[in-house]
Image (cartoon, rainbow, N blue to C red; front, side, top):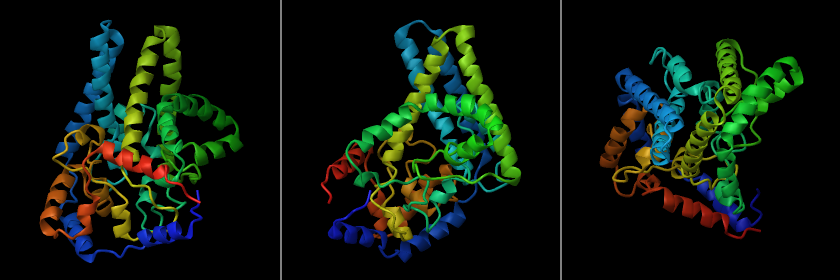
Length: 356
């Protein structure tokens, strides 16, 4: 959508051009050097415990006949698998060689069984962090949601709810067909191979080592998709429907988290680093629920845009240090919010504002 009102357009340009706060950025750079080490003693136990709890609880939701206990298992499964799946974000920022085998382990335990192999995010998310791409039409993870129509927000969530169906079609149908039809393959790679929210985003054909990673991951996800469909004939509908319900709920929570990760008020202008920070959201302690709906450091999303190389387990410490280092007038304080509901309300009210 385009803002035609000259006053609104001028306000938009002013937001995008907010001068960079050198004190905040200098402090952030110092912390980036101090906290850049990814600790395998934290990553591996967290991932493995989350995956084990998630898949075990999913088995309980499928096998247990008592409805209340089955629903409780489903809830535990959703939260645990959501946490495990959130490590895909860490994969895009971990320096090469920092965590040997972690990408392979994540894909085998989480990515492939959920049909979200890491190739769908690697090489995509880093473009969201590019200084000149954030918030523009070339950003795969940005839409001016706060400036769109009121119906756009429910649609944004509905699309997420249908993700398991879309993923089965993507890997169980389009993958094998595209291997036989070159034109379809080009379309699948460009338009259906990224975990992005910008419908105009197009991926390039992978090359080299990444192309080989893509190939085995896509083959694995294809096998999972076909096995899920085949499970209906072997075990009936219940296992598949429970799996899809948990997967759908997990994806909806993530979409709600995405909805409040930014203010979504930019409409294509290149933004300063400080403007990008102020368009992003931290939900730090003392709030407790963000630990569930924004796990693995995602509650510090604005800080992450300042410190993309800092691993999730160090973001809380970095946040505390920044709060102690900077004064009350720093823009850093304006990126901190209290919870999801006020942020959803803010975006919803913005979509209801009449624009020329």
